[in-house]
Structure formats: C-alpha cells, structure tokens
Length: 167
Image 1 (cartoon, rainbow, N blue to C red):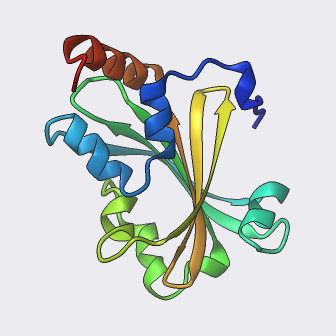
Image 2 (image 1 turned 90 degrees about the vertical axis):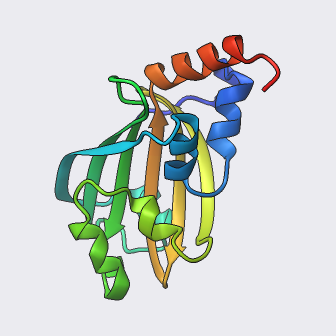
C-alpha cells in the first residue's frame, strides 16, 4: 500500500479530529448520523502478513492472518469508511475467535464492550484517502484495524460544518 508523508496532503481540522479520536468509531459514527449505522462486509480471506504489520504486532514475518474488509455507512447511501481488520491466526484464540463469526456486526461492539483496549495508532494518506491504523491488544490478542475515511464522509462533515458553524 503506497503511503504519502502527512505534510504533502491537506488535512482539514474536522477530519484530523476523527483520525486521532480514541474510543469506538462505531459509536462516534452512530452519533454523527443520528443513530443510523451499518456494516457491509465485502471480503473475508486468509493471507500472509506483510513485514510492517507483522513487526508492529510482534508476529513472525509472513505469518498467516485472517482479513475482514467492510464498508461502514452512516445516514447516507454512500459508504463513509472502508475498514480492513487483520487478525494473525495466532491471535484468533480464546475470546478473539468470535471476530470470525460476527457477520455484519461492527468489531467495535465487542472491542469496546467493557473497557478501552490497549491501542497504538498511526495515521497515513493512502490511495483511498486519509487512514488511521490501530494496533489493538484485546484479551492478550493483537490485531490491526485500518479505517480509511472516504470522500462521502469528508463531504458530510464539511456540510455539517457549514450548517452548524459553532457546533
């Protein structure tokens, strides 16, 4: 995935706050959309982890991972976020096995259920747009959730700013 240094791209302040926000993106999107939210899983597959992801999660290079790709929708017909979750097979043990069977439920529903999991974050500009990558440790299992904010989301928050300039 080609990434660009942050200083080469314009980043509006509203989107920046979303990229660096802590907590459940699911809950934050629901709140923004007046309670409307849905997940559309698009792909699930196994693949070898790349070097950077395996190093970040402290897993063996080329270890097999289970990947879930989804689109996240708010109150519009266009998706707001493209989400990719990378679970090393070694992490899909114990409680974490449930992530392979959640269907169209958001990962955040389980991840933030009782407490805030440990999280390391990096922000990148990728081909699809501004992206935050979070490496979570949940019940001893490490995995990455990558969330790319799509143009429809940026347009929505820009329209919100115009409609509610002091909110």
